[in-house]
Length: 205
Image (cartoon, rainbow, N blue to C red; front, side):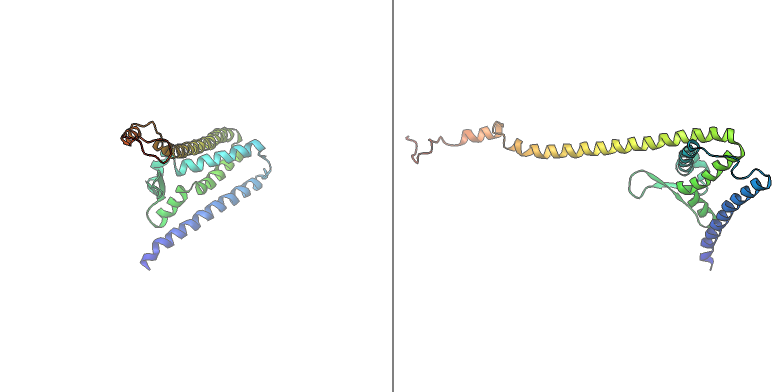
């Protein structure tokens, strides 16, 4: 039983986090309705939604990956070499409650879910300041998408150049071996006996 306690604590922590998330959502809705403000008193425009998407992307990745957040992640996660051998990866550490929080923080989608809820809450509660924050995060998130696309194209282009160079080197190798002007081949020609045109007769001595 003792070996299972850390896992039970981990699962219980996840249940509690889920209840907190849904409870805060229900509590906010109840507060809006009880104060007569309603849930439709504040409308998000298309621009708000687009910025919110990129802001959520930025916050989720910032919490999960960025070095600036590493001190906050340190109690629950660790940065280890990636299994592919390329770069590093943030992984949860420990067991029980510690591991549950580590899984939440190291997952950009999980962290982004809580980030989106926080941003929407701020947009309802304090529209002016919140919209400034969402605009900043949204712009950075969009720039991150563009940077990832440019980096991907750069890596693809470099790989294509490397493969093309290898193909060209392989195709030029037979030509270099058959080049009759090379010094080695000229020396071989000089060592061969003189021959007449193809007539079936030997050269006279």
